[in-house]
Amino acid sequence: MTKQMSEGQRAYEVRRAAKAGVSLDKHLAQKERERVKEERAREEAAKPPPVPKKPGFFARLLEKAQKPL
Image (cartoon, rainbow, N blue to C red; front, side, top):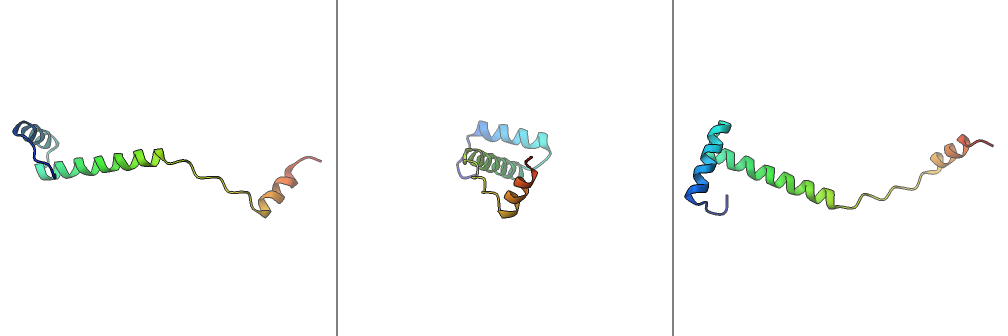
C-alpha cells in the first residue's frame, strides 16, 4: 500500500487478514484489487450505452417480409 498506516489501522488489518486466513500483504493486495475492480465497475456504469446500429439490408428485408399486407 502506498500510504503508511497508523498502528491502529495496521492492527485492524492484521486481525482481518488472520480472520481471512491469509498474510497481511496478501490481504492488502486483495483489498486493492477489489477497490480497483469496483472503481472500474463504477466507470462502466457511468458510460453512456452504445448507440444501436441501424439494421442491415437483410434485416430490413426480413422485417418488411414479416409485416402483414
